[in-house]
Length: 105
Image (cartoon, rainbow, N blue to C red; front, top):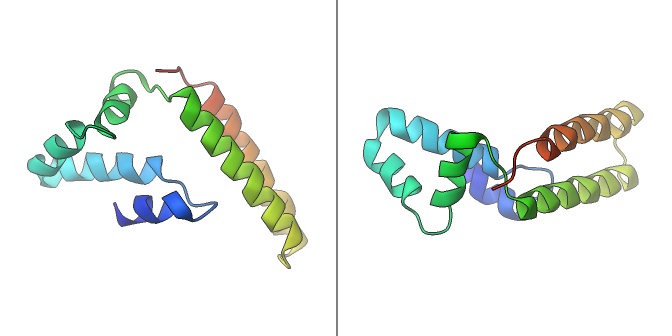
């Protein structure tokens, strides 16, 4: 859960997968946490839509794509090795393609 919260402000670190993982793991070992996450007024509907249909809201798709683009730009300006500068954007492009193929809410 903490990694999901850090991902809100740190470019390149995803938020939703960590929240989904927290919901799954919490449900296995702590049913009260699962109930709290599923009934949360802000995050509950998104988690339920994901569980039921694998759906991702369009706004989340745009936000994720924008953060991946920003991360690619920052990576290009960094002193990272060329393999990282080429490989990471390819991975992010594959994730974006997968994400945009998901059904919407």
